[in-house]
Length: 74
Image (cartoon, rainbow, N blue to C red; front, side):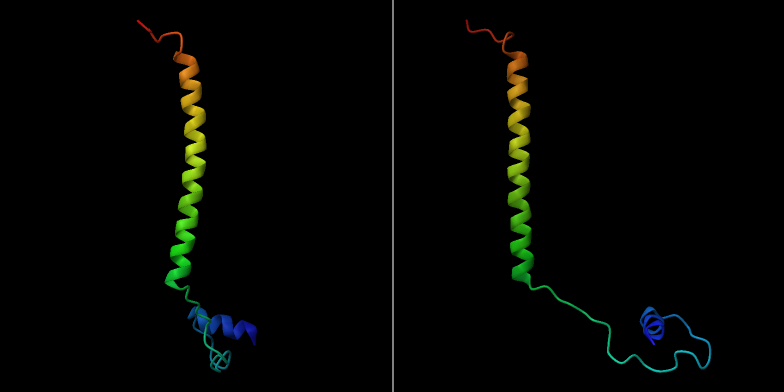
């Protein structure tokens, strides 16, 4: 029976007599609300900003340490 449901939802042609019945329930469709999508997007953006700021801080610190003897204070 489950094999018939899979074939019916995937659109495969079945041989005559096999999987002739219709599926009992339609394929599940889930919708995510726009508010959930917006909050998820903001959360990932905030996390990406924190991670990139931490990475840039280490890059600038090593660059400053590497170039500190080339800076002239005249």
